Amino acid sequence: DAGITQSPRHKVTETGTPVTLRCHQTENHRYMYWYRQDPGHGLRLIHYSYGVKDTDKGEVSDGYSVSRSKTEDFLLTLESATSSQTSVYFCAISESGLPGPPKETQYFGPGTRLLVL
Amino acid sequence: DAKTTQPPSMDCAEGRAANLPCNHSTISGNEYVYWYRQIHSQGPQYIIHGLKNNETNEMASLIITEDRKSSTLILPHATLRDTAVYYCIVRVREYQLIWGAGTKLIIKP
Image 1: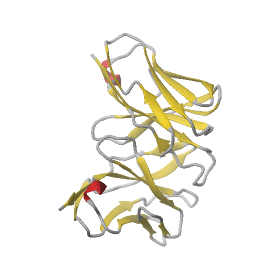
Image 2: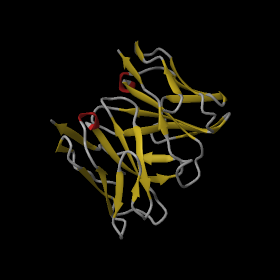
Image 3: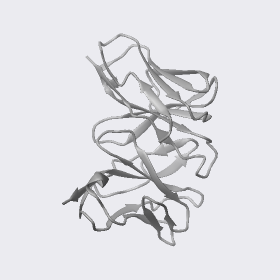
Image 4: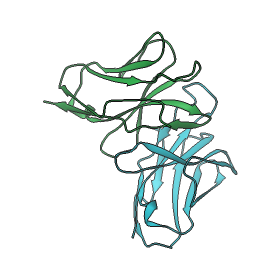
């Protein structure tokens, strides 16, 4: 299994508070991704990173920001958490973003369950 | 925006082959088909990918039709631990995989 950890694994917070989720990898992969998954749905991309300090938005980026100061860490911040951001958050990594597996294949962490009250 | 269509659920007897279909009729010539599975809300697990030719690895086989408009994932000897949601995915834009709702596969003893 790819060396990906996420912290915390579970979090309960209140509306309006800031929340930061951390993804840590030991694979030295260049690309990292944050997804959210809601009940009965597949994953939706929030933000991704293609290198240190290089990030871009995914399809559901509103209300989220990210930072990547080191290859191994990718942080997702909810500036002011809302109940609609209650979800399971998955981090993924890939060696490359260029077309064509296997280097493009994404590997996922165990997820963080976030409940916003 | 999903480019794939899968049945919402399927059953399969333990020890038999599980055949999971996927339609991707609008796939472009250079787009790969990926299969992932997710066991009980764990992180998705990569299974296999393909472009034109059939592929096989230690987990599964992938059969892609000649016109590339559909594919089938085959788990040759399903076990109870293969119960999961299986996602067929086409990479539709740079860095981004578009996920549908997947197929919930239940392996029955």
